[in-house]
Image (tube, rainbow, N blue to C red; front, side, top):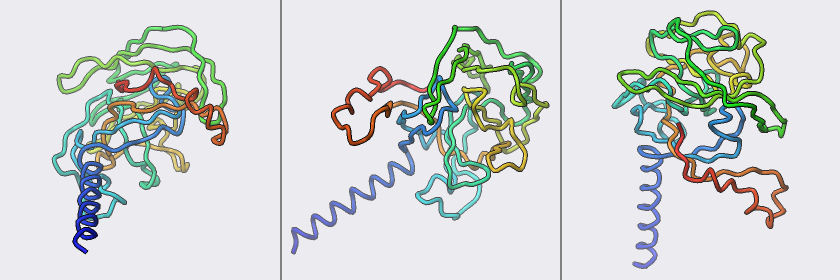
Length: 250
C-alpha cells in the first residue's frame, strides 16, 4: 500500500512541477503557417519564455479568467518575436514580430516599412524560395531589415521575405499604436494576417492588447519538413532539419 502511495505522490509532484514550468518558465510552441518565413519555417518547434513579459490569465493552463491585466508586467521590445492570443478568438495562439509599441506610428508605403515617419533600412540578400503550410511554392526576395530598438535596446537585425509590392498590405494608412497595445507583423510580409488588417473580417488582427501576450520565442528545439506520409517512418530522419536545431530566434 505504501509503495502505491509513494508512486502516486511521485506522479503528482512530477505533474505539478511540469505544470509549474509550463506556466511560469517555458512552453513549447509549433509553427503551423508560413507567416514568419524566413525567420521561422513551417514545422519549427520552439520554446517560448513565459516570464519575458510577466503573466496574464492567458499564461495559465486553459486560460481561466481569474484576473485582468498582467502580473510582473514588462513592456516588450520592438523587434521581439512574440506568441500571443489572437484578438478575434483568444483560444488561438499567434506568433509575429512586434513592430510598433504604444505611441509609435507605423505605415507601409510602396512595400517598404516606415516607423515614426522614418524609412526602416533594408538590404537585399537575393532571391528566396519558400514553401508554405499548403506546400505552395513562393518565390520572392529576401531582405535584411534593421528595425530600431526600443527603451535603449540596439537595432534588431532580421530577415524578411517580400513577394510583391502590390496590394493593401503594401500601401497602408498610418497606424498610431494606442496605449496598452502593440502592432505586430509577420516577416513574410505578403502572406501574413497581421495588424495591418483592422476590419471586421474573422482573420483581421488589428492592434493587440498587451494582456494577450504569452511570451517571447527563444530557441528552436526541433524542425520537421513533413514531406512524406506519417506512416513512412523510415523517412522520419530525412525530414528533420538538422541545421535548425537549437537555433536562437532573432
